[in-house]
Image (tube, rainbow, N blue to C red; front, side):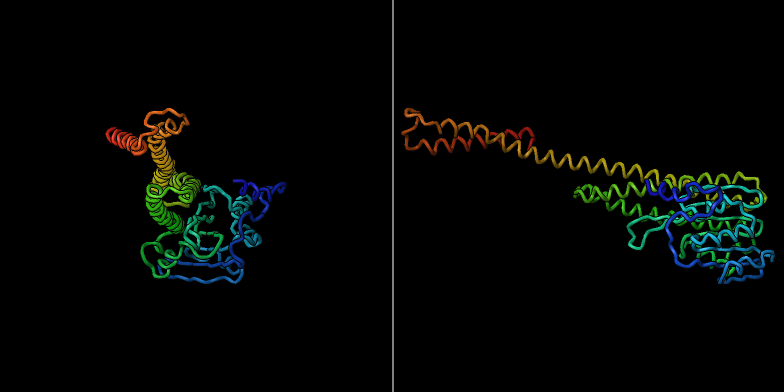
Length: 354
């Protein structure tokens, strides 16, 4: 938990609105793409510099500018100057430790959310901050790295599938939000599969390595809840917003995303309870195994107590002892000891102790 505090301390003492990249540098080179479209036209290109992306700002159609890599603060500053973004908004864009939120600045709406995916090994959940700026006829998206869930949106724009090219910039913003939320279901599905496999391990072989997996899964659930829970408030705020940037036709789609977000949150809460139950099952399994071991040792010790007593009595070195000179004394004592042991075992079985 101290890592975010350490990152935020990089901006200590600086005036508000100072652009300092806080977070991991995930790409070496910033990639900038621009898409301009309407019902009949579509134009997509990769910009060599930010000036090329910002050119033709007033052309008709919906403009979508996507920035992959936010560590070059001069690019973010130029975008902010061109579109009149508040310095604090620009500061939030380059700070990757932001909590999901929505801010209505009248001329534009600023949205922060987390895109969640698995690492290359597929065993660790990681998050990437997504910043969206929705204007009258434009959407600007800021990402930390290339490769994301927005590729299906680009394909729909290129092939003119659905209603996306018939709608405005607010529908594009909705489509991007919906793509991120749909990605949550993929992670939850994989997490559910891991949870089922882990449940079998906890029941069959509760070893310390299994406990490590349980704790890792519990940490993942806390991480998911922290990343997803505020998004419900973000979508709800967009639905309640009286901004002219969001049309009534888009409200119904935002309600659908809101329902999906609630479903994700409820699933995460259910998984958290399941993980807590797995931890209880692990502790119970360990306790039961310890009880079984102690029961076996106790039964063995109980059986040998009277046998040890008999052996101790006949091990005393007195000259005049009963059956001391009897030829069958030794086999008789062994037989008596065996009989006592068998009687005790039969008694334990009758009581269902073993």
